[in-house]
Length: 451
Image (cartoon, rainbow, N blue to C red):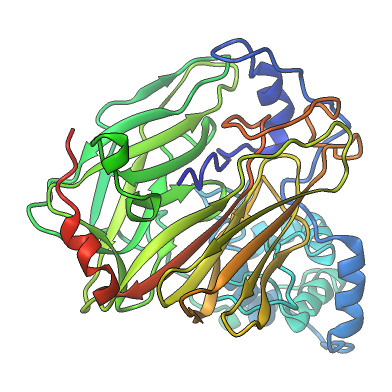
């Protein structure tokens, strides 16, 4: 897909003004510099009305007692923060030790109180998700109490064992890492079209992929990465996007991870297209991005697919503060829904997925009331959700092309679909799987991609 021009990379909000001001003249019309209204938060906060409603509906944690880092707080940081707040990851500082946590106590309090951290933009009243990073009411109260009580350490003997992470890969240590053959030089200024690099897998037999992750070599200039199974046959004979897409990258939480018994198929002789969107940052840079693969170790009964439910025909009027765009998809076979990932650009405001089942029932699957281009997540369902044949998924997105949107490059423009950050996209990505028997013909029909 392009989980597609998916935007760290998909653009660090702190550097957004510089980047958009420099996106000019190479391969596209000149672009007006972004209006600067002061610094934007790295991760968008939860809307104030929702915060107020959540506070009123959550069980109050009125008394948490004396709180210490060793006994109470360190575990919360390990489970909800350290995946990003450690060296080499997207967060700007580490939270691995007491001294690091105490040093950042004031901004931590603000981020926790506003629910801006940990980053999680789904409405907690809708759906249940395996990778939910949000704090429980007690965890939130514990962190706030610890800061208000003066950040006491407590007894060091009570500290939990240090949490171990796998060398930067969210999927664990890959069985195979495929890397661009040579570094790509990113020019200092201008707008770059997507760059595509072919990488041979060397597979002599079919493989089933349990997890995959695209990893930028240089986060400062990588806007997004999408990895596809190459297919250079004539257009009418090519595989569908659901068969071709493997995984994408953007700042946030986007690796593809499938439950036991479900995997994506890569045939013998597979060649991958690594598609990279680069954003120049004012100095010449180089990048050599990679994709990591974890092979399935148990029998595969279901085949995984990725579908981008997109709407490319839209025009956001100048100044429109709440412009609606819709897209839909109907399942041809019985399937199971595994995850959802909305994608828009800088004018994206909110996004909803609704399922309408063959018996007429409707169900809201995901609501993202404050979409954040700077931190994009795959929302992995806690349990696969059956999607009987004929089930329709409707996606509804709203865009803010008004002066009130501080990230809007130019509220005077009519904005349409396009690849660059200053254009827009509307895609509701889904991961789903089908019984292998339903996909047997399509698996057998895949010939080795021609180069």
